[in-house]
Amino acid sequence: MAAVGAALTVFLTGVGGWLLLRWVGDALSPARSTAPQRVPFTGGLPLEVHAWSRYHARYYAMALLFLAFDMEMVFMYPWAVVFVREGVTALVEMLMFIIILVLGILYAWRERALAWA
Amino acid sequence: MAGAGTGVGVRRVLAGLAGRAPARVFVVAGRDARESVQGLRLDPRLEFVDSPRAAAILLVVGDLPEPLLAAGLALHDSMPRPRATVWWIPASGGPKRSDFPGALVVRAGEDVAAAISRTQAALLLGRRASEPDLLPDTDPAPWRGVGPYGQGGTGMTGGVPYGRPLAERAPDRDGLELDQLPVGVGPFFPPFPPGFVLEAKLQGDVIQAAALGENAFARTEPRGDTMAAVSGPFARALTQPVLITELELARARHHLAWLGHALRVQGLGALGRRAWRLASGISPVRAQEVRVFSRMLEATRSLGWATASVGVIDTALLAQMAPGPVTRAAGSARDAREEDPAYIALGFESVVQPDGDARARWRQRVDEALQSLQLAGQAGERLSTPVGKIESPRGTLTDAVSPAAELLDLVPALVTGMEWGDAMTTIVSLDLDLEEAAGRPVPAA
Image (tube, rainbow over all chains, first blue to last red; front, side, top):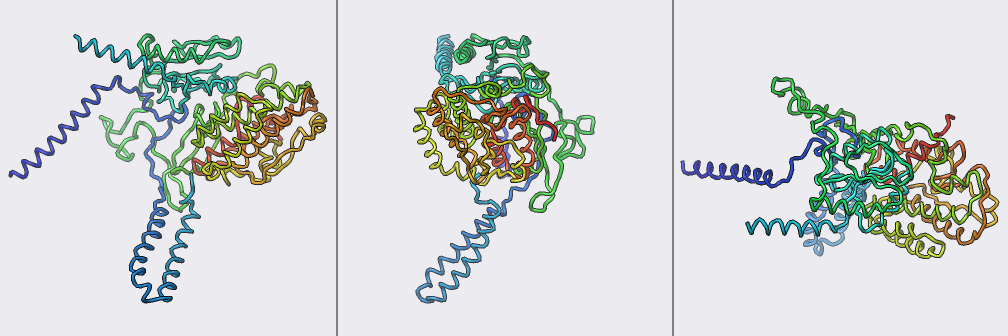
């Protein structure tokens, strides 16, 4: 019961604090924003559609780059430990692995994931 | 009581300090206004901001055609308080109407920067009241659902959110069916020329379809002289001999002013101001400074990355266009000055760039500005020969062809498929001017 009471106290304090901060913000702000002030600025034209829109942020390009470099590191640490013992075999294996990852980077490059703009 | 007195005192001191800061100005430029505004760009008393949200003063320049006036009023109302409007009429005569009631009217010959700066100080000190809204404070499209309390419906959370339909859907470049957002940008979007309206369909930041809004300057009744739309000495040179020095200095000034704007759009404001300083004090003896500046631009890697291979125009289209910096930046050597005996005597040879992208265009304009300074230095008292066409800063101008209108027509096809940043770079790189385009329509082929 005490646990529920504590949780309730935290919840009510949180909500109360939030309402208080909102009230302070409203009380301090010099003026209410008007309808024309709330319109997003695109150069003066009225808006035609709602701004809720789902679009493709193309996270896969970022994921691809992350995987390329992250996987490289994951494999390289144990590889560095055994490299002296395994010799040329380890070098060739690592080269093959890196070539496969570079293909991913080249694909991301083509998709303009690395572009400046 | 003492506390209240201190509070008022602190407030006065702070307002006084704020009043001495540069006035934050948002420009709404109407007819014949671009050149006049350019003259204010370097004034230390003013700070030009890119959104009305950041402005205290709305600077309305010249006469606004009817379609632009609506946008101007909406921008006025979207400014935060305290706010004021300064209506500057740089041309003599000027409009009689009073579309912005309460605006401070500044006429030709008066110091507009001082007036703006005084107005901001008066606003902050409370000596001038903030202007009320000019449009009604009603939501243009309130939230409406189907139920009696506005609830329910078919939108994302029911109803038609704020009365606006949700975005349509269209296939995206990865083969997915996703929302497509129609967005109208303009007519006073600061990176674009005044009056330029781009109706884009955006998916993320990719422009999937683009169209131009109607040219607001074209709707107004035609004036007696069609050439007035083209600035300064170039219009005169079409019919009468003009000093080559005057023409070439005007060209160099135009290109450097354009460069300043383009650099600002690229986020390189300090370099942009440098270009404007060069433009404002242009003279043949300062060619070396322009050369140094050109090397600085080449050394600015981010400028090259952002503009290289952006906005390349189809070669078949280029071949049909009137010559100008844009076609010369794509390797075509045509230039109207090659047919003028006066220029031939000066040993004029057109300069070109091979690449045809946005980077080639700024390099081309820098090169042409340098060449113009050299020609202006050599020309002495020589006069141009009116041969029925003249090389204006935007291209070869004749009685029938306006390079500005041709460049404007390129935009929709050019920006379709581009990401928004590239589209802005491309549009700026064309050096568009709606007023000039409206002054001389391209005749139907």
